Image (tube, rainbow, N blue to C red):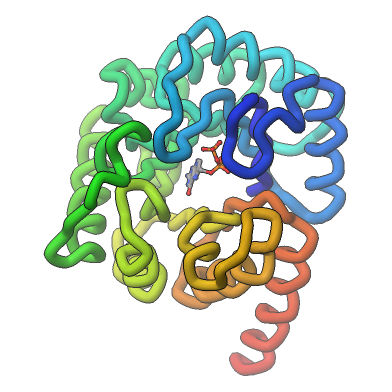
Length: 262
Ligand code: HH2
């Protein structure tokens, strides 16, 4: 899953792809590099980010979705917590809704997904971008994230969403300390046990910066290490900004795993 943020303030690529033509170039580049899905977001979720109105979010994402739909055959997901934005994005040609609130941010979201038959990524988070990094505490982060995601899956199924349409995500960096993020990556197979595909997004995130002591533009190697560990644990979708190095690293890892199986 290649990340395409059409925001002025995303933590690592804010402002770069606001212009639809530049967004298209970046999406084309990511698909040529091997992305199977492009995730378009119009609202930053970085810690402390201000929320964006529905109107503004639509103004940012719709022209980009329409343009991509006309010019590129790649599936599109819309990264939003607002049902109205998701509905308009699905109308414009997106196929999956990537909801960092797991459907709890807007009561219309789950019914919308059930009605349209779209795919949904249910991501775990604690609090909102404004509050989520205020001393997050868990007794057992893996068990608690798993329990919450299991509940969200049940809510989605009860609303009529098909199991095949659901994926889950531990929400690395969303209301978690460095240790929580590491525990979740180490315990990813617990989430795989929920029986739906697991999505993981570690790309350029601050826990990598804290481990390595490097700025956001120098986190590609850390992103690769964490992404490979996630895939080794059973994650099926990796959300990244740097598609080419990720695809190359995964191809080598997969060659080794398949040699091992033979
Ligand atoms: N992380 C971000 C945004 N959306 N969606 C899923 N499913 N999983 C993630 O880990 C995830 C996500 C945050 O990263 P980014 O989009 O690069 O930054 P920003 O929120 O500042 O736009």
